[in-house]
Image (cartoon, rainbow, N blue to C red; front, side, top):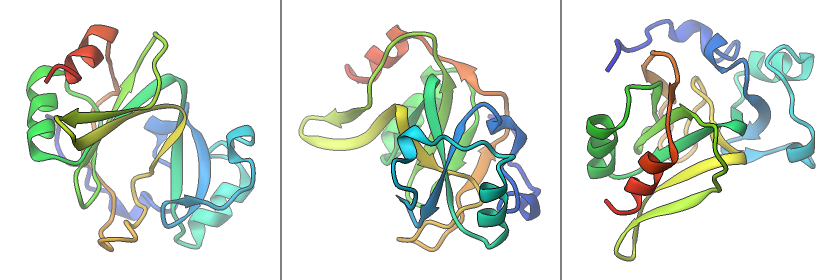
Length: 165
C-alpha cells in the first residue's frame, strides 16, 4: 500500500483534490444536516461547503454512479481486501477502514456478512462515507488517509467474491 498521507493540516480545511468527482454532504457527526441532501449534491468549491469545513465540521463523500466504497469493520475483511483487490485510496475510520473504488457497473449498497455477522458494507449511489479530516463522533478519532494512492477500479466479479468470502 502507499505511504500514509501526512499533511493533516489541510484535510479539514478543504476536501482533498482526489475527491473532486464526489458529491459533498454536510454532516453533524455522521448525520446529514441538509434536507433532501440526495438531491442537492454540493461540490468541494461550494461556499457553503468551504464555510462548514472552516468551522471544523464533518463532511461526507457521496459516491454517485462512478464510485463505490467498502466499509470494512472487521480485521479479516481488511486483510482480504488488501490481499485480493487492487491497491486503492483507504482511510482509517477509528473503528475500521474505508476503501474507495471506481466502478462501471450497476451495484447497490449491501451488507457484507460471515454467517449472520455483519463485517462491512458496500456503499454506492446516494450513500456516503464520512470524509477524511472529519472526527468520528463515537471514538473522537480523526478519519485519516492511510494510503494516498489513486482510486483503483473494481469489477463485478471482485465484488461478488466479497460475498463468497
